[in-house]
Image (cartoon, rainbow, N blue to C red; front, side):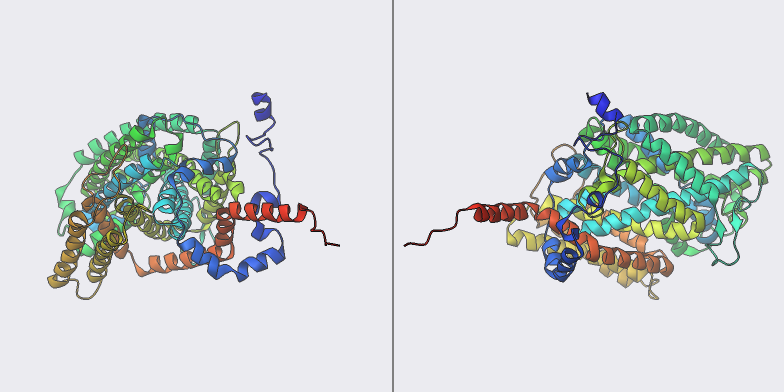
Length: 597
């Protein structure tokens, strides 16, 4: 019977998977009619107040919300699968894509230091993710952690930025795939794109090949997590061999003279600006956290997979970027296909094809794993009704969220068709850094605040020192980017403020909860440092990135006011409404009182 139901495309609820109705997209009472929606809009302010103070629970995020998907995601992954997924999603999406661009225009020969700074910050974030993923093993990753610890509004802002990161990151990889294919064919990196002079600069090179690649990899991801993981593991073995070749061949042609006359031609500011952009190279590890719901033993496997992959990737990035600037002077590096062109310039023309093939492999793996993780983010967001629950549905046969995968893929394909890589990278990095900073805050909240147990005095102490950490971190970043950046008193003042905040948390704030399985080390110092490094790297990005980030965030808030707040309010108060309806039904059914004669 179960096989027949699956073959018929029916879900666990007995309903067909392939369906399309208003009730699937807008099942909430606020959207039952235009009159209902008008009433909901009139009550927007009290509903916003209600949602600001609301927090989800671990049981809901990792348990009861799964029923919205009608069919379960399948537990089929081990820690080794997660490590390879982390490796496959990251290596190729960064070092082969952004190293040339940032070495050429921002960091120069100091590009390995930019990768080291970004990697240090990413490693701090991975420790925070590892603890939260073991405590809340949900497909929502950071979205779920923030819903539990910081509430609906913070989670929604993270959700919007997660989807922005997913769309932009996939689009950037798709564009880079086209550049390296052109290099593999021995052509100019833009030769396979269609130039449209009527469009604005940065958006006038159409890339249909990127669209085809995005659709193809997403089709594989929709077929199942186990198959995608197996293909990624096999591809990663090939990728490791190619990386070993790049390092060996690159350092055999290393010329220390290429690092002169200045190792810092753009100064420290250029290094940190590059670090903020290449941080995008490390974003694959948060996709690993979204696979916790499909991991056999998340308490053990997620920390092992996350931390082992992140540590090795940071070392690989630093070595590969050093090999690049050692092979070729930074002023001569091709920003679009750096390694292929560098090997050709070193007299190893045949090696450019190996490198281009390796880059294509890495980017393909990144797109495969990205399609898995992005769809699971979307699934959990839809389970909460912050977006239509239609996108939370899991197919009974493949065990994958097909609708969510299609939605993210279509968005990425539209962006990839028009937008250039430099436009995409800065937008994606600022979203990622913002989310990682929020996750570090969420970890501190989890350790130091438990609703109903933390006293008002304990809460005030914790919030005061947490605010000092956050504000001091913002202060350092703003001061570094001001006209006073060369003067040390500002750094001393803000640095002392950060240290006082972290020390205050350690000495004066009382921890309210201990991790059940895996705990991040050196709390509160490690998450406090994660907040500081993420906010500092955010400050290193240009004003254009902030303008785009601000526009996108404003659009998200408009969506939330018009849709998200009403849908989540209805879901949160569904039991109250059901109780009211039941009570009204009892009253209506009761016999009318008799009038005494």
